[in-house]
Image (cartoon, rainbow, N blue to C red; front, top):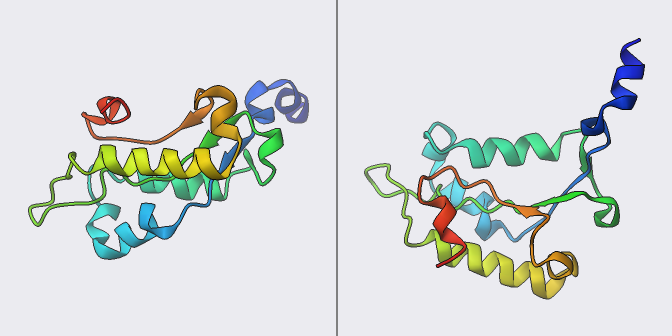
Length: 129
């Protein structure tokens, strides 16, 4: 039966907590430049929207397997539609500082169970800058 398969599926038990961050990290950036919705880096917006309405979302951080940090690091675009990668590391550091100061979950694992969606090719370098 389909229900049996779902009960045995470890993904079905996955729980993701979505941080509710100040709008400067996501909503205000999108309001400033709606091109982000159709830009090649729109994955960060769509992942956020998906997780907000997903059955894997938990409102209880104590039961979370993963913690999603909705920071739109590549959505701040130049007039030519290019991301501003020099701003992204600062934004990510600011979000990490906020999270680690206001919630205990980052500090438990030094962020090992947290994730960002950073679709820009420089994204892997942002946290280390």
